[in-house]
Length: 519
Image (cartoon, rainbow, N blue to C red; front, side, top):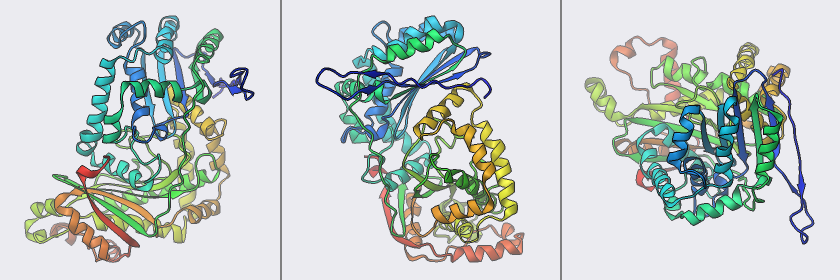
């Protein structure tokens, strides 16, 4: 980034004559791009869903949506849409566990015309009852209906976090729980806006071609936000004793969506993270067919659409081919994502002659195969050849993370969250210095397969039989149609036999009715 430079401005303000401690104003991060036609403004607040009050789960998300989807003191939400349409400007809010980020993108020719809208949304929101009711209804519908009906893959991921962070403020989805959203009032939103979105927990990001006066104006105006009094508690996720499985029983599920994970004590803030990135990429880089999980589960056995692994939260994996900024977290975990595999009911219908008596579908075999692959790399490490090939790929691949000014700016803000200057630029240097021994040490330090959480969303016809197999560690042979079985290479047949009896350290299995999740 030839034209990149940063300006960090800390402004001290007195709280009042009775208060001696100074308040720090927002940090400002600038990404100057003299040839850009667009200006990007990102405002990242250190709150997030972990700052939701107990009993008001979903409040931070709803507040952020009301700020961007509502109006200002000067214009209603409908008037804003009409006013902005000719400018092709856009703005939106994203809420994760520890941060809420507002993004504004507009052509530099419209700075003077658009900026009053930005300022009005953040400083003088209208907070009308009509906008509140509309957005709360949408949010409640998502928590009660959409998440259970639209994507079992996302369902399993959020349900795993519910299990992994149970008892902490990370547990609930960013959109909240059914009871939490129902309890939120407009007065709650107004109070949360005044206490959680402060000048002292804000990082201002600016990118593009804009005058210095614009940067000064944004900083000056956002000083008017009050001091925040809401703090985000970072949880320490408890490592389970053994493998804890929760099976969500859902009517008419077409397959079994599997998500498994366990806490790790490293993030982008530590240099070890780059070593784990190499190991993870070899095992199951998101949406890449060279990963070991993808090769064994999809390519070789045609069990599902894809199988991947992660060393941090991956936002909207079903739609994002690359990691996106705006979801930095201090509490972290490694995970395995197995996209839905077939259930027994579907296999029986498809192959009534050879599989007509099948009781359980592919889920236990797929889970065993994935865990076994992780177990193998923990025990044996990566070869030098695999390490060199994977590292070479990653050094090029991470450069694609910042393909737009908005993404580049977003990763810069996330870097500050982790205490780094520019992680996206620094990570290449970290990767370059790595050795295969560094990577294998990190694997042994952070990865294991004896203790993990597993969430499986499956059809109600499959839930209890699947639970019985996992509870007893009963063998789970792979089920093929006869014509497929006849053409299998001998090495696949031999591996199948080993996978079918691979012992998972299962110590707890529960079947949960879908109606009882996210309540």
